[in-house]
Length: 165
Image 1 (cartoon, one colour):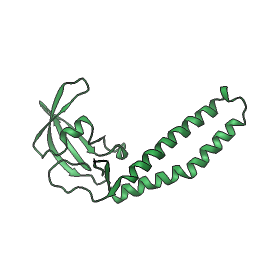
Image 2 (tube, one colour):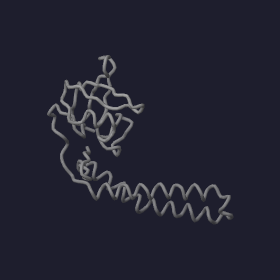
Image 3 (cartoon, one colour):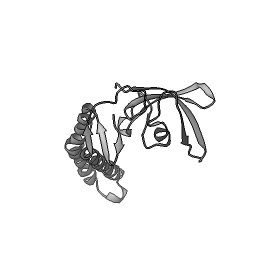
């Protein structure tokens, strides 16, 4: 679970270990693999028209960006516990909301850093419009946030419980 404020990212030990392992892989074996792909593509000849070479260089660029992101994230990380079930929305919690005017139209999402995005549950960053609107609200309270078109939307907090993975 993460909470970002003042450039500090709070992570569970499990999340920290997972991100650290990803960084170690990308910094070691993955760098070796991409270097081998680039070398093999270079041997194919003219680099201006070599699709394999350009694809490998693009993949290398994305990989190096991810290495920088992970390095920065882990440098500012503090390892802590998941939030307590206090009924107040906080990063690291699964939040259930109802959209204004329609109690049947609900959404469950994880309020956390995008590092937690998975196919299991939709994830909203605490810095996103919806995330910042609900963060700190209590169960039963209404929260307002800004839509991409500039209009305001209202949701009601139905539930907030710690994410259990």
